[in-house]
Length: 594
Image (cartoon, rainbow, N blue to C red; front, side, top):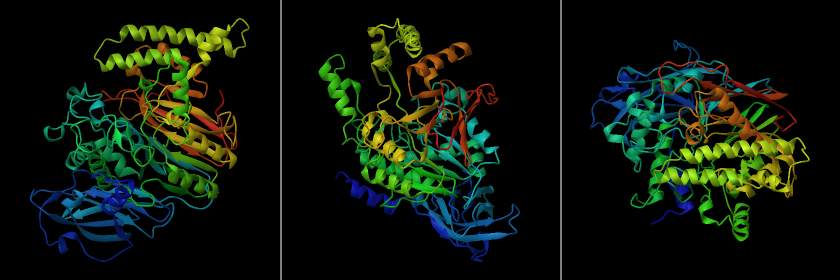
């Protein structure tokens, strides 16, 4: 039977991600003294921590029994204020088994705020690596610093961005905004160089992920990556899923990459999310608050992690379903785009978010979520060209001639837009219409769910909050102004906040889609400038580089800084200092300056 939303929540609350609660020292002795199961083990996947609060944090590991038939093994945890583990503050012991894929999560309670802790696990005289974590600060704060990451595709390249963040000692937490794994099989998306890079899928996990075993093995593969292990070992994560943790372009009842013959989507979704909660350092789901949750960094930052994928999202609109060459088709498209019944967050999550924002006294209200919220509308002529590129690629055709035409059109329209902005009186009505007749670039993003975006932005503006939205998903760096529509009943044509989007860890971005010449920096810069000119609300883009974002919050401003690596296709790499970019937003401004 098909699962209803209520039964899905009940199943997920009952079976997902339960953590052992630890309240302090138990004096239970070492695992080697107390274990009744002497199966040899190893800690092949390192350690991790996450979901930090001012008085609690989750620590994680996975034990690998050397005896394949082992049902369970006993694992001990230790937490201390020092690396030598002389100042122990927590310990305990528990059996873990195949029901959780031999993963263990311990939710440490009664910790001190703003404090660094060291932790490790032991089983049958084997010790895990030592992890470092920290609790969130509380009270009056001068600064909070976060790293923001997303879209780590194993066969696409090396995870150098993880290494660079692991080197930092100034972070309060690492935010991962989803696409932590990808579900494709061998030969799938961005895997052309996998064999040469030594990042091919093993034989027992080289097909598309459909079952619980499939998803578990894919997480295990990712966790063998030493760069990812190093970051998990160094800092606490605050995570949320995007689509590829389940399947490409996931929505509530399906996905673009879930096809006939692949079973019922609910079964696949439940398997994917169970594996997610087993392998990620995150507290288990609660039926009343499935994954969206908040984190308070003293009086400075309220962070809300949101789900725009699994819980409430309606199916994405498709341009193929509308005749945009006719007035009737255009009207039908705009009616669908602004339909008040179309959901991304869903009413329950949206109300939870706005209620919590209203109660928050923090200087900054920050949304950690997946997809771009900035209005990314391009001239309709460009969109028609890009649509033909997508269709030709899907059919296996050559798109070089179409892309050449698109480049010419980009330049032509940018020239017209520049004249419009400069107030050139020679601009004709027809020219103005060409650059002002715009439609959304990506219907999978907030642009495809305009009503809920207006509700959220209008509420934030009416509450006079300092709103910062974070996004991943696109594999490129972006920054934009979040401006309400002219018909917003709460705040019309108002700057309601800003958005910062991080580039990907390894997944390719617009440079691949548009076949950009990455060896020509001047041409890349011109393309970035053209796109920034054509999209009114956009104020920064990086179309070619992989990396991460850092955010430094203070009482008066927030600095966003994009960091990029020279290559994800080579073991040796450099940080691209000439591509690093910083933008500042002042408290009370809710806008990026041009």
